[in-house]
Image 1 (tube, rainbow, N blue to C red):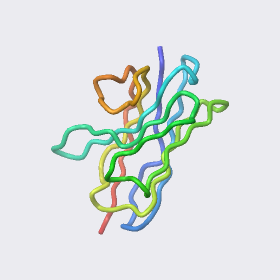
Image 2 (tube, rainbow, N blue to C red):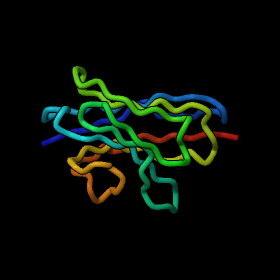
Image 3 (cartoon, rainbow, N blue to C red):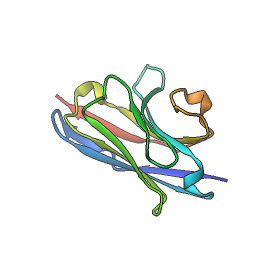
Image 4 (cartoon, rainbow, N blue to C red):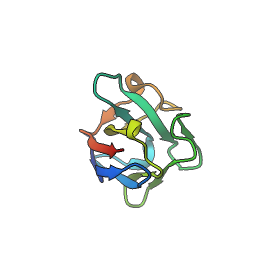
Length: 123
């Protein structure tokens, strides 16, 4: 069984920054491509960013390109999402997910999920 635990969410003013972390345990982290997803109230869950198993390839949703950076530390079994220049429309519950599909864009393609961490951006 694979467990993912997100942390780092909170309340921040527009223009501010947050760094999310996702600790994975239960199986070797390096086996999986990883993704960050988010879900705002009343909206569907959407892909934010993805990173392949080695960290050599990343991709981002157009809405976050240039502001968010996904990274991973395979030695520490941890996934990160650095979020800069935050906007009120970035407010959502952020989830990390693990899977074997590349790119990790569709929630249905992901095998394991964390419970999420809430990010609130005030204007």
